[in-house]
Every structure is written in structure tokens, then in C-alpha cells.
Length: 215
Ligand code: MD3
Ligand code: FE
Image (cartoon, rainbow, N blue to C red; front, side, top):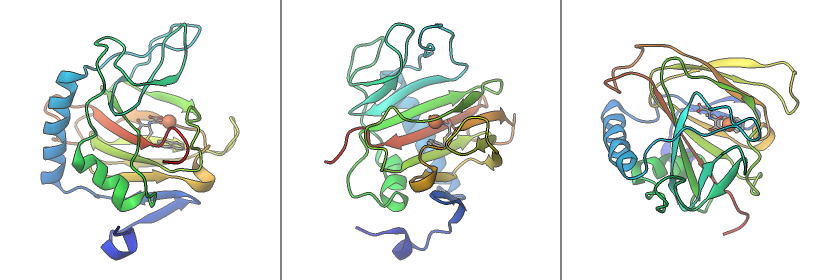
């Protein structure tokens, strides 16, 4: 397997375990990705997850690819499921071009089980949260941004601590592992009309994860 040091991909370490790969995907690759995602979303339509207990809807719409997908509803809360909550079908496969980011940046020798797609219209946000629904908390999360730029915020392992903000742009890849894996993070703002990739605007974020240990 070729690792990042053999591929000479520019990278900045924003914080321990938080690796930033600006413009990982070229414009042509981003267009291919957007077209592949459009097809996959026809098979696994975007849905609005609901908060556990309160049933409050997320402002972000979601779907998933891979063996397992992240879902949430009022009664059963956050969890990974093998099938789409409305169609009942297995999630579509993770596109190869998406897997390339995992293989070239994540430094983990096994394939991801889950790929969550978050779609933000220009008014959507994601509040500060930790990602801890995975048993494999030692494996990095690999995130791909497409479409309009956003303001991403990340803090430490406790709520209410100091946070830092970064802009993420279309084609960028972020790897979150090590000391950053349990950091609180969120998306404060989408910057409208900052990309021409998605004809109707908005932002797509893909996050690939290992859910279960080993394998
Ligand atoms: C930092 N997504 O899906 S991606 C999520 O842009 C999520 O849609 C955001 O937070 C988005 O859970 C942020 C970057 C990211 C992903 C996972 C992380 C940052 C993270 C896990 C731990 C710490
Ligand atoms: Fe998250």
C-alpha cells in the first residue's frame, strides 16, 4: 500500500492528530464525485435525522454508503444500521474515488465500514458534538468537503473549552485521529455561492469511519 509520504500529497497538521490536505481532489475529480454521489443518492435518498428523545430535526440532510450507515430517530437514538430507514435497502457501495482519500491519507490498513453523507443547504449548521458511536475510536475519521466553503470549529475533549475555527473548501480532505478523535466539533456556517461545483449550491461532507474493531 502506498502511504502519504510516497505520494507527496501536501498536508498541514492543524493540531495533534488533525491533518489537513487542501485541494486533495482536482476540479475534474470533484465533478466526477458529484456525479457519482447524485446517482447513489437516487438509490439511497437523503433523509432528515431526528434528535434522540426530543425528536427535533437536524438542519442537515443525510444518507450513507458502505456496509453500515449512521442513523438517528427519537425512539432509538444515534446508531449504525445496515439498511436505509425509509427504503429498507442496503446502503450503496462507497464510490472508489471516495475510498481513495481513505487509502491515501488515513494510514489504516482496512476499509471503512461506513461513509456518512451530510448535505448542508446554505442555512444548515451542525452544533458542537463528539463522534463516539463507533467502537473503533482508535481509527481516524476521514472527511471530504465538496461545494460551498464552510466554517468548521474544533475544540478539546470537554464541552465549553477553547475552540479554533478553520475554513474548509471544495476538494479538501481532513483526517481526524489520535488526540483529536474525541474532540468536540461542528459546522457554524456555510458561505453561499463560494463554489460552482453543485449547481444549486450548498455543501456536501463525506465522513468515512471504522465502526467495529479489528477486521
Ligand atoms: C473532529 N461532520 O459527520 S467533518 C459528522 O462537516 C461531522 O459535516 C462535519 O461532524 C461536517 O460527524 C465535520 C470533519 C470531522 C469529522 C469527524 C470528526 C471532524 C471531526 C470526529 C472527531 C473530531
Ligand atoms: Fe462529527
